[in-house]
Image (cartoon, rainbow, N blue to C red):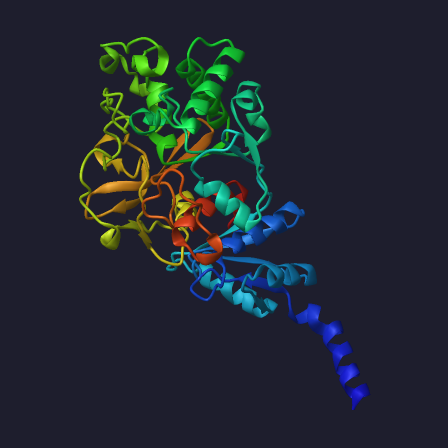
Length: 422
């Protein structure tokens, strides 16, 4: 009997490669850990392998050539997989290729090199992107003003802007935190950095950084930003050569004609916005459709936004960026929570909106040879995250659809549409 089972085991080892041709990583409700599934995809690419992203097939599933090492890695990371034969893989391809099916297969070819623009010292708040990259086990580098001004950005494919204020107003935290030790250290470090690079003001330093980031994007980079890094970035670009900072931030008064001097041709996403001139208000402009100085029109219980459905075969990029196992996403707040639609430039793609408020939550556009994506809010699994609160434990939310949108952007530079047969 023992010899019989040994013989059968040998047969399985011999013939398994003939049957186990592909590994399907489902991304529908059957997936145990959606977030780590992206990490598996990156792991394959980083080792020189390739894969496929099956857009709109079972929540945007991934498919790879079978290997025992990949199977083992998925088991270790707790990622659900299905081992399928060639005939099943071909059936999936045929289903996707049907002209009536709103699905598409794209090749995943290379692992993008990822950078996060963030201070290297401790901050009193966390960052959703760095948390999910760490949880998904996707490697990244931290870069800040030294690296950006030292022209290190071209070494990367993808750049995320951490919760940042590019206007030189220190996040407009003055009213609530100007006596806090972390705030004083932030100001000191920023002023030291400005002096180090020959700038008289922090606002001038941050403008120079914003321009370098703009050049990175125009040159073909992939830019991603959340929360205040979205609108403060565009505001800084529009205020090139204009002093918009009150004396409490830079020692002299703002230009009283600053509003009329803004140049909206410089911005990526927004135009015709009005600056918030009160230095004590926790708001930069009226871009944010939910100003922090007004009572909310919606509560956590009914705050949801909806992802638009795009044509996978013709609108590949927004389809890719909206892959999910649900089209209704739980809302979450931030210094910049959402974007007023009437201030978004023509041609910008709105990929997610809060229908009840008519606001945009998730937008995308092109700039030169590159692209950018802005995502409103601070933490997809913490509705109203406050300064100093502990970070979200993603082990408790491995299937977060809000965090999936971030990871879609991570793999975006890897995707290449398959050529059609002629």
